[in-house]
Amino acid sequence: MTGNSKSKFRSPFKVIILIFGLGLALLWYFTRTNSIAVTVWKVERGPVEVTVANTKAGSVRAHQRARLSPSIGGVVSAIYFKEGDQVKEGDVLVEIWNLDRKAKVNLAKQHLLQVEAQAAEICLRAAHKERKFKREKELRQSGVVSEGSYDTAESEAATSKAACQAAHASVCENQSALKLAEAELDRTIIRAPFEGVIAEVEVEVGEYITPSPPGIITPPAIDLVSTGPVYIEAPIDEVDVTKVSLKQSVKVTLDAYQEKEFQGHVRRIAPYILEIEKQARTATIEVELSDIKSNPLFLPGLTADVEIKIEQRENCLRIPTEAILDGNKVYTLSNNRIVLKEIQTGCQNWDFTEVISGLSETELLVLSLENKDLQDGISAHVENISNESQGQEP
Image (cartoon, rainbow, N blue to C red; front, side):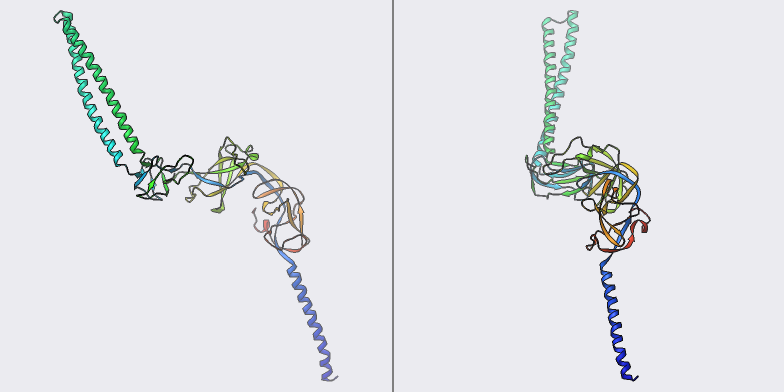
């Protein structure tokens, strides 16, 4: 066989090999793109806590918080603290121009001193007249003084006693006038009603401020927050509130501390249901936190969610709550195919849900719900078994 014949023979053979390789590559490519990698959960048995959760976001609350405004209008003459400052109970925070009222207080004090001195003089005279009358009475019994002299002494003693009583009444009147002047002065001063920290200062020196008119809310001059322990306030649906009782254990989570859970207990249940139009009717509960000393930034106003433990059921067939779709449906993996199933659920919480029917133990539940390609019937393979790879509950 010549060289030309060999070349002709090899040429078709190369084409066949090339076509075969291309076919294998296409097969691999389409097989690869049609099979998605998913994380699964092996359905298992375990405890499921029966819980009640808030219907809307709760909040971290300070035990004391006051939004302070003056009781009268006026021009701000002094601001003694700035935002972030610590203050003690009774500290003067803001003062409105009040020189006229201070003058009235000083005038009332001086008038009171004058009236007290006059009362002291009048009562000393009354005491002297009373002693004179007693002597006249003794001498009259001895027949030394006349009836007229005795009557005069008695009249003077009674008159002086009445004048002393009137002087004491005048002192009391001026004491009340002083208290009134001091009260009028105190209306121009904003004091701290408790120890805390200044959260906000909404006024400036020289600015005219007024109290809120009836029915109209205006910003407060000072927002004061206590620095003591905080608590959680959260709304519970009227359907669930009857299941809640004092001292029940509560798990608290906050958006600001996404990786942490805090423990507490129910300390108060509102004795009424809130009726807010276009909203579900709820009752407010308060949760006392067990220990937050290690979290100095547990700030009032943070968003909080609560989960109240009602009871715990043991040895339930359970799955992660996050894997359940609307309509109580879940994705499972069977024979490398995604299967959409409808299940019947029992008790649940944010972590686990009890499965009454629709799944069996060790069945593979798909957790990769964020995958946009995930749908019933497509090919899939296991990338990770969550509760085996972690070695613990999620």
